[in-house]
Length: 311
Length: 128
Image (cartoon, rainbow over all chains, first blue to last red; front, side, top):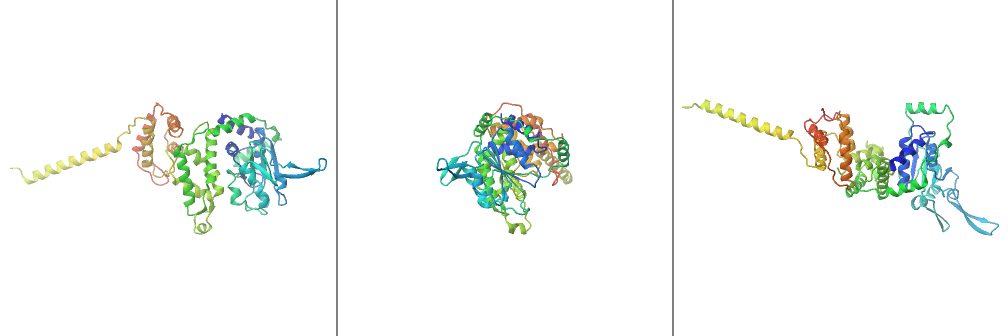
């Protein structure tokens, strides 16, 4: 069932977005693993379009918040409004009360607003002035951000980054894909053409199946050794946190299910480790000055090549 | 009466025969075919053969990466892929050990056993 759903979703999103199959699959993996995803790329590489089409083909409620420097936490979570008719305060839900929240350009908002999402992302609930409300299920934040080199951005703090299960990089398309995009845009391409291909019940069933995917003790041991290796790596100041490893575990289970298996293999972990761990690793600047790679992905690849998986 | 030269010659010849037979036995031992009794042992043998024949393969390699390496070296891996699925279901998924044909795994291990480690970047030269 997992593989079938993956094929349906990827095929449907491909109707309006060209060449983003891998990215779509990663977002689906993350949703099944009950995680949140950070899409990073320069403007105009279809981040928002992918998020929009993805939520449409799953038939989930979707809301978009454009993060700007003057946005307030109230604009996301909601707040108490005085009802003149009833003469009492009532809670008005903000856009966070949805299934998929697109936090567009999240790093354009100040840290106070970015932090407003922490509780929702971690505990799937929102609290305003002591009043706590559960969020709908499933709930997923798809945030987009432009690379840090751009002006007027507030880099996400480590604690916030750690809440994102995966970071998906949207690179420029290849020449062939670019030509295909241009060709497809000769005729009008409407994102509303995306149909709902997976029902809420089907999605719920698959999400529950993820919990039944077997993870052997050897695989858990492999994950623990991997975590230890990132923490002992000299060129990193900050290695993978226990939360990061738990999320890698959940993500690997979802990936295994989407590949039609009921057990996790070392390859599942190694394949997805870069997307789950890279954004949480902090490179030691002093080591970087000594000529060690500043690229956390390259450092992680070297670590993964060293840690022996169970065979 | 036998001359000393004749004795020396005979001893030298005997020595040569003995060393040749030792060398031959060592070579046979090296090329001895792996004879596992089940799928698990077949993959264990393949792992050892891979480590010996492809020193460039990082110690963190997964089976899929190993198969990709073999494919790039010209080894046909289709039959092995089915065996790998069953092996992984048993190894990581707790499925019972399947009673299946694992000759292809053994064949590849034996091919690797006959290869010499390649130079850095080139990997082992594997031929069928």
